[in-house]
Image (cartoon, protein in one colour):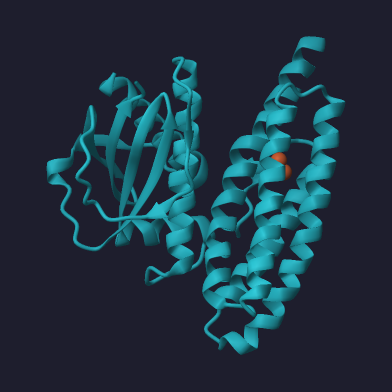
Length: 140
Length: 149
Ligand SMILES: [Fe+2]
Ligand SMILES: [Fe+2]
């Protein structure tokens, strides 16, 4: 499984969203890498891409809300990373549409998405958790 | 200066391999021993106080191991997916290096990863390379940088 329990940040809503994101990316990759012809997988690939576009934006928004609520000092920088990824996904989708669903393009997208997501959740999102934990300890 | 920059790259590689691939031990060796015919070469350009590029040389076996580890799936050949995934790893390592450099008062930026050849006829004040060994294979770093005038 793509998801690892040590990615949890201890905020149930965010953890659930991360798990859902990993599940979706995993099934996306399974379709993308399956041995059937591109004609057979293109529809499922497109559906997942559409879902992800919406879900990622929703998740980023909720996570940013949480950061604000705990006064996370890295908020602006983190928001910029989110915005950068959303811009990339939208730009990619446009190219992909214009190419009339070119398989090479989406294989490229899949590779980047996999590495980006793991790093973002395992490194960047963990910083929010570390901060909230430290702050919690100080209040004790 | 050269050592400081090399250390920033080594530490960032260690951190990223640890966080993303769960590999905690890596070690640095002279690059003369890096022999590889079939590899994925990714350049990350650098601008700002340092100018030039760093080339990440991932042997095919290392590239496949990285992607297999990340995805839990079986990749047998380098294709657009694999190249893109290891390009992003190079990008992430370089991003970590930027933070380390800015703590040493060097402000730099990076360019998006590109597949490249190793040939380069430019002169560099800092021109060094190093082989890094990990549990899932070797990586070779070619650091080619000048300080901004
Ligand atoms: Fe997140
Ligand atoms: Fe995030």
